[in-house]
Length: 276
Figure 1 (spheres, rainbow, N blue to C red):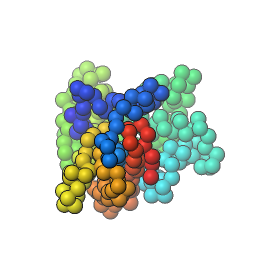
Figure 2: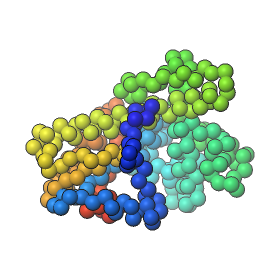
Figure 3: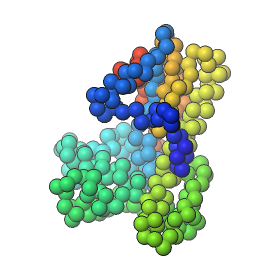
Figure 4: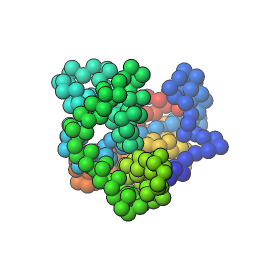
């Protein structure tokens, strides 16, 4: 697996089956359920941003998720200071870039690159500053994680699993910067990895208890997604149970009311899945 605690897959690398192109989607059609079975895919929705919200205690980010708002639209509305219904596609795109980027310790130069060639550095700097001014709780949290990693040499997930960083005190600037970026992301991505593994175990216990092990089995885990092969006539019922298990790994009291939301889709092959 990866250093953050995520599982990896090789020979074949099933976590890297393409999805964004027509050819990629055609490849996904080749993954077909056994006769009488269907594939059930359950996916945590924006889990790393949700984790960042409750770990940081940032009130604005917490409220966005508690209200069930689209997080990219809501962030765009805050940063660009426009009402939600006036957020356009370009504003949302920019918000999405920074939302995911800051979780990976993205700096101003990387932000500028990811926003597009036409973005000036001064514009990227302003966007970066405005974002952290609006979400100051998140900014404070990320700085705290970096400072603690330097002091202790490791970071911890919500569940207390540690990751150590040898390069955090390096005299070589790019090695130190890389370690700092990884340290910022580690508690967030690491907590996500912990949650999905706990969910896998609890779902397995549920299937065993209900004597469903022959009728439903886990075939793949792709980052924040679990894929089961399941008897067609019971797929919808079992999907709801698994969804509930996934959403209740952490008590909402411990996540400041932010729900770890999961969605599911069912289909005969990995490409043609219908969301419920």
